[in-house]
Length: 275
Ligand SMILES: [Zn+2]
Image (cartoon, rainbow, N blue to C red; front, side, top):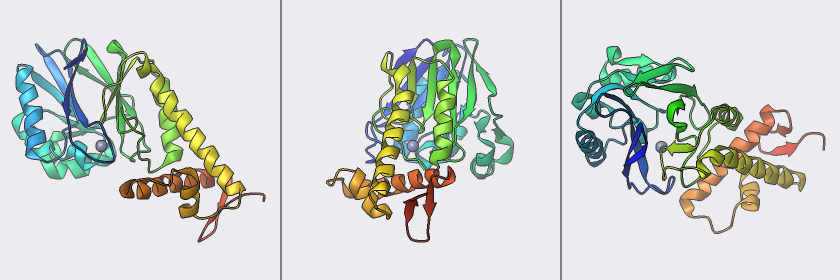
């Protein structure tokens, strides 16, 4: 499906509980000339085949690069087979180079520079935005020509993202907001078109700020452990798999507050400073 003049999405309905709404791979550029592929999906043959079929339907354009948003398996798992079928320079965050080199060979992988412009067909370029938080090697891509942000797993279309390092993540959201856009093309969940596409990053920020406030309130009430704080700020009927994810999320909020000097951590619990 064509999203904007230079963006085509291949959507697949995988059914992970962590990212409802399926997953996306993008071809960007001009199908009559050159394109880049963003992400290569999981290693399941079916997913790889869907990407290759879509590439056929686009008329097998020259591929100027394979761009990867981050190191998680559902984004790089299909790389070796995709690379065999359509070889092109593999571009990723410098921290991901060694890992990918084991899949496709050292010469195939070229690290991105922060803010680098990757040119492709249709006379457009995607800018690499280093956006750690969900993962330390996460990169988003900005297509100014179509006012589109490819957000990988930093911003999802149908759910909130899991975050390893919230301190970095909030800075990454600030960086995304400095790039004017109307459409969000996420790694998972539906593409978010205008007008909501322009609001989504800010909405994510507010969502995190509200969650942080709930956690600060819980600490102020004297709750000190991750489990009890999670029980306080999340609905009680969370599904089993999501309960663990919620606890990890609360932990990353607490780690951010510690980093900012607002909360003290003892070996067993957290407490607001100055109380
Ligand atoms: Zn993912």
